[in-house]
Structures are given as structure tokens and as C-alpha cells.
Image (cartoon, rainbow, N blue to C red; front, side, top):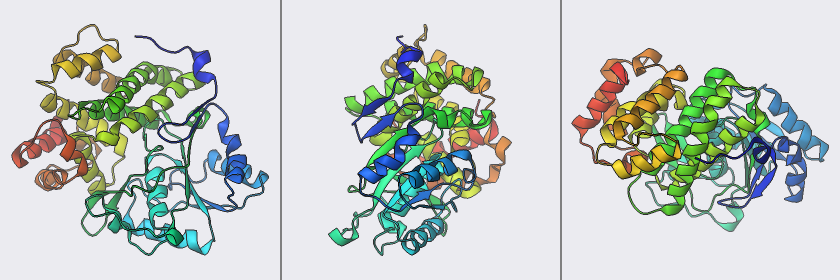
Length: 394
């Protein structure tokens, strides 16, 4: 398995697929000039409550100010963004006369910023953007504001697409908000922004990226672009995540992991699977950290999905440099990685009660990710998966 050298990974790069991407250490310093070059004057910075007050927020504001731009911050975003928070973000955007949104932070900040962008210049409700409904017609005078994404964790993978997971508070369910005309104008990947991430969040978000790559590659059908992204993402994540955990100040390792996360995020444009279907509903109801929830559920779903998928498992094993390409060996390797990351062994360990299994299963079957799981699943089977994840996932 080939891996890029640290010198190669530290070199700034500009990519244009699937959206303009500026990658490299220290590139947050460019954002003011880039915004000015786009003709912007007053972007709204959107982040989550956990990120507000961290150094990168003030650094971003200072960079914008140095380029002659005004800005403000909206940070009333939960770990699992709620529809009422998105509405409050629209009010903030309009009252401040903003002309763009810069989403910076982890997955919740990305989802929050993208969702606010969908409704900032129109009178639709975010619920109208549910992917299962016809896309709202956006007139020219209601055009979406410019959207810039800056991930500060190597896990979300949400920076190159416009879909957002939002909790419908009235139903206690997450839904996927989307519109085909909204795309980030720029994704800025600066690995220096991830260096200060605490060890537990590095592990949880890294495991999230690992899950994205595996689930995306297991989606059935012919999509060689996404499959290639998933496999390269898996190779980068599996190689660099252990290095990051041992050497948290290693910027090259952080960069390799961040790019792997980005590739895995592009790959899941073709869909995900039951790990996310269950995790979305657990997160909506119990406000659990998304990457951690995914990581706990992952082995349970792999044991259900992978038998009969030996060809795909072999290619994933090859990407990870494993000698034994069997299904059992692959799952064992994933479980060993999760052990090394100190991932709890059951959802009950993070406060999910056993009596919710049927309710979570029913909701999970309605999730967008369930529709692309490689194995069709009955309600009884889904309930058993949830019960196993709650009791003993590995």
C-alpha cells in the first residue's frame, strides 16, 4: 500500500473537484482575501456551541477584518442541529445584513451553516428542503448566499456537498435537507486547525470518517468515482489515524487524515447504510456525539452486511494493507482499531436505554441512509441490530 510522504502532504494544493478546495497548513490566513475576491463584504460565521470561543473563531474574524470585511458569529447550534436553531440562524443572517455564510467547525457546524444557507434568502421552512420532497423553487432574487466551509475536525466529510442533517424537533427524527442548486463555493482544508482537537474528539471524528469510507464503498450499484474516493479515503484514514493518536502535533498526519475524511465525505454522495440510519435517530433522540455513535454501531452492522460481499471486502482490506482479506479478519481489524481508540463497546455505555430499540428501529428504516444499505432489512432485523448495538456491539 503506497502512502504519500510527509513532505508531499505538507505542500499546499488547490483542487477543483467536486468543488473548489484549498488544502494545506496555514491556509486559513487566505480566507479574507478569498472572500474579498468573491465580492463579499459581510459574511456570517456559523459554528456550534462547542467551537465558539476556540482560537480559530477569533482568527477567522481577524483575517476577515484585515481584508476590510465585517462579520458576526452565530453559534446557537447543538451537536445535532435542530430545525428551530436553523430558523434562528436565518433571523441572525437577515438582521445583520450578511451576504455569505462561512461554516466552520465540526459536523454540526457544517450542517447548521448549510441549512441556514438554504433558507437565508427565502421564506421556506427548513423542513421544506427534506430530500424526500420536491425541491423548492428558488427565484433569482432569492438566490442562496455564497457558502464557504472550513472543517476543524477530520471526520465530518461534509465540506464539499450541501446536504445537511437536521433534527425535526416535533418528530424527534433527523432528516436530510438538500437542494440541487446549493454547493459550497470553497472548501478550505487547513490541517493546523485540527491539531488542538482533544484526543477523544480526534478519535470519534476519525472513526466517523472511517465509517463513511466503509459504508459508502458498500453501497450497491456502479459508481466508480465514489468507489475510488472511498477506497483512497479508507487508505489514508487507516494509515494516518493511528499516527495522529500517537503524535497529535504531527501536522502531516493531521493533513493525511483530513484529506482522507474529505474523500470519504465525497464518496458518501452515493449513499451510506444502517450505521448512519441508526445513528441519526439515536442522535436526534438522545443528542449523542455523531462520530462516537457511528463508531459504536459499526461492528454490529458490518457483521450483518458483509457476509456475501467478499469481493468488496477484499478491496477494502487491500486499501488498508491487510494480509488476510476475509470478512472475519476485516471485522476483527476494525474492532481492534475501535479498541485502540477507546470507543465504548455498546450504546448503553453512552446512555442509550434498551427500551428505545423498537422506536429507533422504526425511525431508522425511514432514514435516507437505510435506502442505500447493501442488504434489505425487515423491521425485526433492524430492531435486532439496534438491540445488539445497545447491549454489546463488540
